[in-house]
Length: 87
Image (cartoon, rainbow, N blue to C red; front, side, top):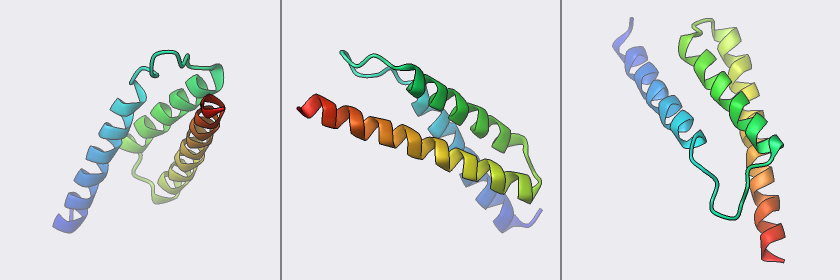
């Protein structure tokens, strides 16, 4: 393996591990996790796990798109929750 590719892969795995750990953080007190948030976090964890072991570039690209979509959904729910709490 090309040394630059190895460094890139190592950085990506480190980022994936950090993202996966942050998914298991409990919601703040008074903010119960709803079913949508739970499913989104489970999907994100699943896609991160699949990305760790997938080497096919086309499949990795698909997984990265799915992961980005789930992260966007999660961020959208977080924003709506904060707006609701501010009212």
